[in-house]
Length: 111
Image 1 (cartoon, rainbow, N blue to C red):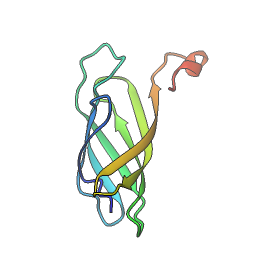
Image 2 (cartoon, one colour):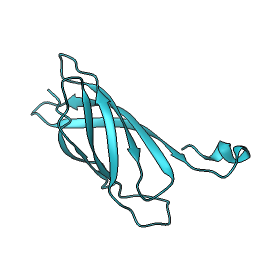
Image 3 (cartoon, rainbow, N blue to C red):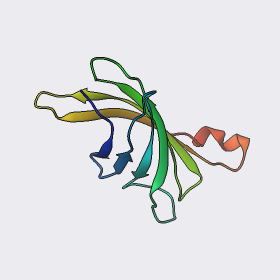
C-alpha cells in the first residue's frame, strides 16, 4: 500500500516533502529541486496536489509546484507503486511552464 506522506528523492537529487493526505486525497508540501536553468539561487517551493484514493494502494496523483525562485510553474502526474519488500516508488512525468514576454514566444514556454 503506497503512502505519499513523507520525504521523497528522485534520481537527480531533488527532494519533495508531502504532508498528510486528507480523506479526500488532497495534500500540500514542499519541493526542493536539484536542477534549474533559472539564474537565481534555488529555494524551497510550495506544492499542492491530489491523490486518487483506491483500494489496491497503487494510486495515481498529481501536484503543482509554484517555483519560489523563478517565474515558472511545474505540474507533475504519476503513480505510486508498492514493490515486493514494501519499497514504494513514484513514477512521474512533468511539464514546466516558464514565463515569456510575448505571445509569439509562447512556442518555447513549455517543456
